[in-house]
Image 1 (cartoon, rainbow, N blue to C red):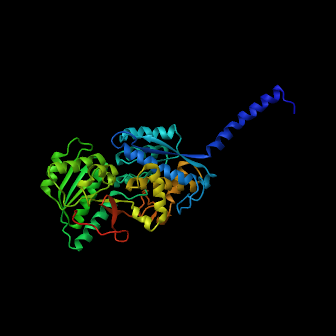
Image 2: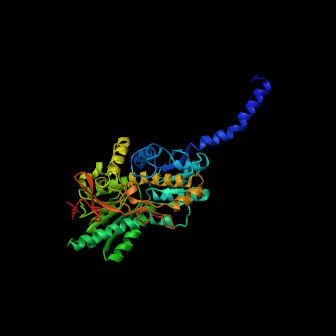
Image 3: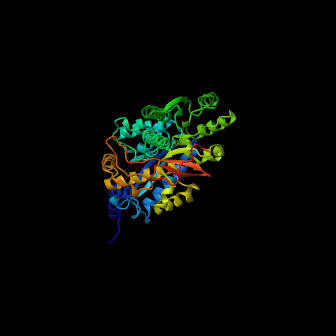
Length: 415
């Protein structure tokens, strides 16, 4: 065929006409998911660890692994022709309004089809509201405030337990220890003043009343406070059988240091996770709190029953230098659950993904968690996410409760 100016022009026009279709085909090769965490400021390490957890999950989704985990044995999302997951990270700096702005940016500029986040529950409030407005599914990977799933949002989902579920496990443990003859009568609640601490305290107050425990101190403090001297003096005066803190990492470190300075040693500490699941806290003050107990969603002890858990933990550890903890394990599963729904939806349309999330029924043994399953109720909450209690012994956490998950008896009182 002789190439002349007319053919060249027609060829260019045809190419231009086909360009949108070529672009559309290219777009189906990847699914863009927004991940919003504190990547700077006092909680930056949480965000850095979260990035590694999400990258580990994306690696398993996008490549082929012999794990009994959704999407592990295929490359990419089969429901979307093998499309690969691409993560776009955003930094909310632990600021709810920054979180709101970053969620808007992810949706309108990065064109994400879903968002996962956020560590701080106060940020989850604003991010989930933005997602609701744009009809983009939001999966609350690690936020534990019970009120989050009770706001009538259609696009909000949480696979992990919330603080009422966690607190119930704590009080079930107290009841079991009392039956063994252990003294547990008085409690001191110590909680920060954002939605996380407030919701946690409310749940614990209600359970204490219901189960017959006396709350001798209920102390609310300002998050990221420069001093906790007055509050610790109140805790020392109360001298409860159990101190129950709901504090993020920097506040938790300050609490334990201030207790040491004022000569207050708690008889027992049972923490609402948060800072008390973080390596940074134990690196700083772990020698002062041997035997501390924290609630959790995850136990590496599960690897003894499910070798897959240990292998995936090794993948995460290679990226992060750490074992999975309560946060990073929930973050990992958050992306797996979201990607599984997108795959079943066979679409990046928000409403179709939402419908697939509603239909989720993932057996517990196809997760890395000690959960019965992942199945969302009418509020988007998974009620089958069974919590565990972990005790810090000889520099590591061991599972002590419930009985079916325990690998050791609790040391009570703390050594």
